[in-house]
Amino acid sequence: MRRVSVFGSTGSIGVNTLDLLTRQGGAEAYQVVALSGGRNVDLLASQARSLRAELAVTAHEDCLPALRAALHGSSIEAAAGQAALVEAAARPTDWIMSAIVGAAGLAPGFEALRHGTTLALANKESLVTAGPLLLAEAERHGARILPVDSEHSAVFQALVGEEMEAVERIIITASGGAFRDWPLDRLATASVAEASSHPNWAMGQRITIDSASMFNKALEVIETKEYFRVDPEMIEVLVHPESLVHALVGFRDGALMAHLGAPDMRHAIGYALNWPERAELPVARLDLAQIGRLSFRAPDLARFPALRLAREVMEIGGTAGAAFNAAKEAALDAFIDERIGFLDMAHLVERVLAQMSTRQGLGNITVSLDNVMATDAEARALASEFISTGRI
Image (cartoon, rainbow, N blue to C red; front, side, top):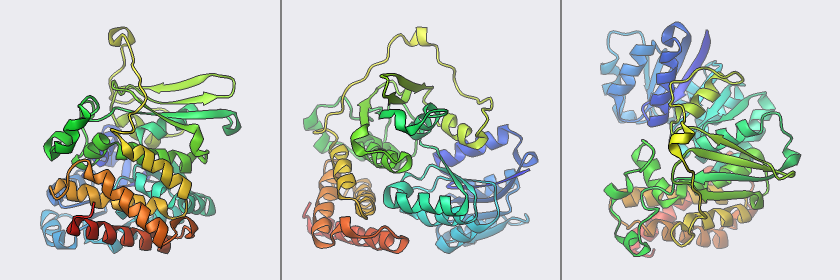
């Protein structure tokens, strides 16, 4: 039996991962070591009971009594907090899904790699903030990182049997999110509810808003550079409203290899779970005759300034990715709390990056775990200062 853990099991990626585990035999086929979640302890406890997990961890220490109560009468351990997440990641496993949202997923992922685990990486912030460090850690311990973002999974699959030297460009697609067809002058008044409704995908609120602002795609551009170790100039973004072509790889002979599939995260999750084999998955099969046409267009950088900021982050280097991600998370929190407007998110991130690049010299800071976390903390503090003083 394969020993598996799922970090972020109560989020959309985690729920879909557990759906596949259950469909592929559940507790009879997999020994579930640890599950982790946030404040939805009832769902976390239910998942742990269903799959007979050894351990359930909530990220919030104040939720521990409720988690223990929900697990009462079972033999499942309960724990809480960041240290408990790292300890859970250190437990021997064959495969770990890293689906914790945000920089909080960085430390558990590193710990898993130190033990030679195969890490299915849905936590894009890990590569954005500490890509070189993460990949070096995997190589040092003989661990493997498999991409779970649909775009990077698509690129990974298109590269099977190919040499990176033959790659000319990598094209990742974006749905364009909730506001892809809005007049630009309406974006300033966009509400949280409007930004939280995705036209194609069923995802959590934070990632859905990131899709509307295209910050998720900005992170994915940086991810592509780090994971596939390509020059930023080789990475392109296209708006593809149908969300059926997830990525394309262009080769030096002019050929383009595209990955198509229904907008269902179980494609990428299932590929990572069953790699290097392909298993039958409960996803829709495309009827291209019925679909009829696929459309693409260049992204409007005035509508999606996050894409421009991603290019600047890659040019700066060092710990700029950590500052970018932290400022983005702080901006998203403030937007959800209705303390800033939709367009203010990009303005805030740009201001934090500009000030930290001047003051801290982000490009000259060595990418170490301590430096990444220090940059993260500084960027959040600076973003908070700008928000509280209205200097956005």
